[in-house]
Structures are given as structure tokens and as C-alpha cells.
Image 1 (tube, rainbow, N blue to C red):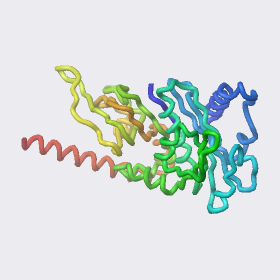
Image 2 (cartoon, one colour; image 1 turned 90 degrees about the vertical axis):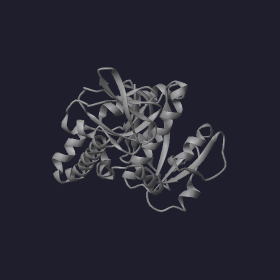
Image 3 (tube, one colour; image 1 turned 45 degrees about the vertical axis):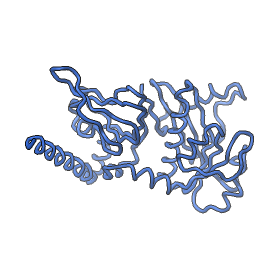
Image 4 (cartoon, rainbow, N blue to C red; image 1 turned 135 degrees about the vertical axis):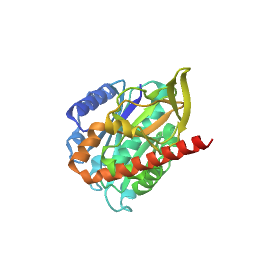
Length: 298
């Protein structure tokens, strides 16, 4: 089953997170909720695996005068040098098998960073476990001091993260719909979409290799591979028509994703934004016509 990582927006998602956090931390003090959860600036991110919570993370507004944000490490010296809103990823909880731990940890952080950036935060603090320092660095975090008791205090500039994030999109028009993005991570061998099924999602792969498979008289045939950064499955998602091919992930593949319901809701509310989708679809048709013409010549 793919891992789905998104910002918690519904009451059920928040309940799922609190219950998961309770299970992870019950042995410490039995608390289910603390005062951070009721602050309006608090954002929670959840990772679902087979419809169960496999991980969660929480980010809050870092207040330079609020001592509650300075535990177990004080970022006060670093915060005085920064301007603008500062976010603080203050909690990451995971309860999963060891081989999935780095992947879910990484994309929980990415989703937290992305949501904070979308909400105007300029910098983010995170006290990272030394054992995960390599993953944290790949996101753009840099240490503000030496490790302390197995943790490294880090800061990230969100503008750098967003610049790198957006550079990975070949179909840049889809960035106009960023408010509905979330992450889906597929393990090697997992099927992203199935030929003949209705299309409810579209994806943009950040990494990994996606193979295109179609049915034929001879059986299943591999016809191509989809490059990273290209929008996948948008036509079937928009039309709700059956998928014309199956897509299989040959290696761990992380995708920026969005759902048909959220997408259509935006188009109904703001029809002018459909122009961006028409541009993408037009390029698809032109590319297909070019390929057909080249095949006829051959």
C-alpha cells in the first residue's frame, strides 16, 4: 500500500493524530493533548499506511518570547538574527517497520516545510536526531550549533526549499493548484494506477522510475517510462474516464499528488484557473500527434 502524507484538515484526521501520538508517548506521561494543540498557528501532518496512521508531525509558530518553544533546546540566539515568521517542527512520531522509517520521516518533514512555506513562514527550526542528519540535510536544513545529546539544532530557509521544489515540475501550470498538494510514496513494485479503473488522482513524480504497462493480445507490455516532474494521470482524473494504461513503480517513488474532488472544487469556484490545465492538455495532444507522425514516417 502507498504511504499518503498530508496536512490534517478534518476533525477525524486530528483525532487520528492525537490517538497515534498518545500511543507513541503514553509510556512517558500519559498526555494526549498539550497546550500547543489549541494554538491557531499549530499545523499537524499525518502519514497513512493502509488507512492507519504510521506517523505524524506537528509544527507551530516559534515565538521569540515564548519559553515553551525553547525546549529541549533554545533557538533564541538564532531567532534574533532572523526576520519574518519562524516555524518550529516540535514533534515527529512514528510507529512503523524499520525499513519504512527513513521514508516516512523524510516526507513528513517535507510536508511540514511545504505547509509552513505556503502559510508565509520564512524560516523553520528543527531539533533533528543525529541518526537522521543525512535526510535532514537533503531538505536544506543547516546546523546552527554542534550536536547535543544525540540531536542537532537546525534551521531552514523556506524560500530555498520552495525554489528547489518548484524546479522539479515540468508542467509548471499545475503549481497554480498548490493548496491541494500532498505526498504519496510508492514502494518498489507498487502499482500507481491500473488500466481500466476510473481516475481519481493525478501525480507529479519527484523521483523514482515509473513504467507504463498496457494490455495486449500477447499479455502485459511495457511501452515507456515517465520522466520525473511530468504530470501523470491528469486526463483520466479530469474526465473520470478509465485509465488507458497501468503505471508501476520500479523503485521507491515519491509523488506530489492531488485528488479529483479537490481539483474540481477549485475549478467550480474559480473557472479562470482551468486555462492552466488547458495549456497542459494542449501540450499533451501536440506531443502525441508528433509521436504518431514520427511512427507513420518510420
